[in-house]
Image 1 (cartoon, rainbow, N blue to C red):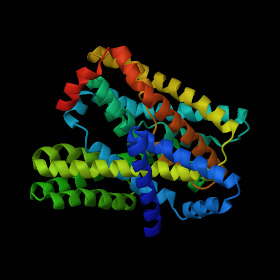
Image 2: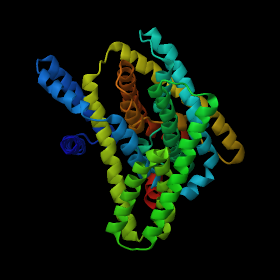
Image 3: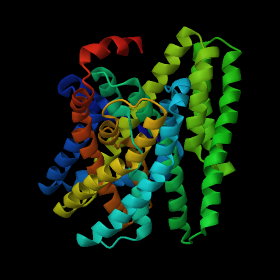
Image 4: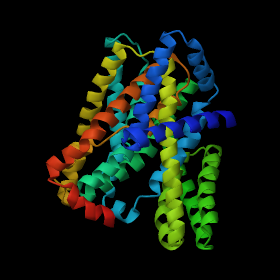
Length: 422
């Protein structure tokens, strides 16, 4: 494990440096593009008669237990880091649209995307079981604000939009992971539970995760409040995530959801009442670093995995078709929520378009796809997921700024002040 960690961390550091020094794209986008270029170069090297390179990477990849690494560890770290920076008081003001998008929206999206994949893939020559299609629907449903958040702030997006996108992403990640986990359990066990059993399992995972997160979050909050020593306080937050993630499977609850709840408690009550200014600075810096490193690692992992996967014209056609379908389904799920929200409060101009186009797919989708058990269907789902995430981050991520300026009339200079204040 130490050798594996050394290889991936060194390689990720090199890609991040190359992006910062020579390419200059936002970190998530830059590392993804360079990892893709690297995997293409490896493919070319293999075609030119250097198979040992491909064989070495294949042996390296085979030594990784993706389900354990990603589902049980990396996701919890990523979700805690995301929750740590969400203002709960602002989130509470938009709880209904966020709650609807993160629960009903995810279930609606999972079912429709899964159904669309089940219908589209046979037309291109793949007979894929409905369960794998639903797994694909679940893993591609969560949105990722990392690449788009900086753009939202720099171009002057309305505050309500920023809160809705970040809040929805935080909770739909947790809900999508629970849906994915339930479906994956059905796949692995080979038995289909009744509707009541499935609902009970979902409730146990989700509500149990909320309860565990609340308990360990408040225990850690009181420990933080009793001291003023930033080294120990940073260590306590790290112990919270590692300990909570290790404990969750033994209690049969969702580790990722427990980390979302714990992150909200530490990021709000803990930040306000239990941390000095210097502690806040170190805790924020530490978890921002963890977040960026893990996202970079995810894209490096899939860049290497892509070398071992078959990519053909049919994959590109299927991914492009599904990417369009995903955007249409996103629009369908956003429309009623925006309409209902407009009856309770003012809704910013262009909200529907921005929520649709700004729903980028990213690291969570990649992590879930990588955690599927080894099979031909897994290779297909992984390839389609990577192409769709790539399209989402490059196409939507690089154009969302212009869309926001056009529909809201915002300017960069307007936000430069508010962004600084924020």
